[in-house]
Length: 402
View (cartoon, rainbow, N blue to C red):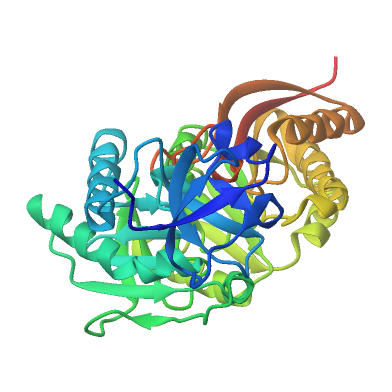
């Protein structure tokens, strides 16, 4: 029986990515578009010989012209497909993470490309940055409220966030605001025994970096009685976990005055205001200054923002990563610990490893790997979908060279 969706046909020899498990079809792979097609529509992708490859939504303004929602099986009811995707996403999280605060939907990794939904207690933050998925956003949210409600979780508020740059590339308007009744957008949460105020309206991304949840917990155990330096502290999460783990003193730095103000509020919320010194400064200037003053620490944490957001700038980013890791190692006392990460998907794991190895060599330090970690399981890594694997996190012991 003929399916109700328009067919998009690939050029002969194209579609290598989706044929090997990928979920994107690019503009230069498509042979033709049927008449009357509307950007944002659900379409079927067929190979040059008519073989069905998948179903997704189209946007001819985007270099990623079709993002797949399904492979193999044809889609007769998009509502039923969304219901299945949302149910599976929630069931997965119930078995893998603490769901008090977690990412409920992680774009391609949950087979709903272009949308993320984070849960902070009984509030949701949704970010949709693709035209087709934005049209399905309310269906997705309704299904989420239904599956959560079935488990006794009543969602009291939803806030929408959009990335203006990504929306522009999609030819869509960036919309930020309440979906439904208004509420106080400073949300109190507890993670790993630490309390935070999450600003879901004006904070970065959706307001809080849930992907580092278990990495923060891993750092706690290193910090009993330790002197700790937390660089790029943002709203203080690693610094506060260090105190929770028993650190005797913590110095935390970030260039953003807004972030430092929020970090101080979070410290006060936990009664830690006398245990952490927050300073607003450029970490690239702070590290050599600390070295020059002969400072040292038992634990140094490096959690920088993404230094590269394109493949073209990876070489320059590598220089930045090397600089902070080299200086960070010099500030670690013998047999102390360096916790270092990269959140850029363009900094490949092997490349990040080489950056750290080179930094250790130039710092005349020996390093022993304690752990290699990635993002929290609520940000699952979907193999053959490289965009979903982005966070690299090392815990290393730093020794004087022998």
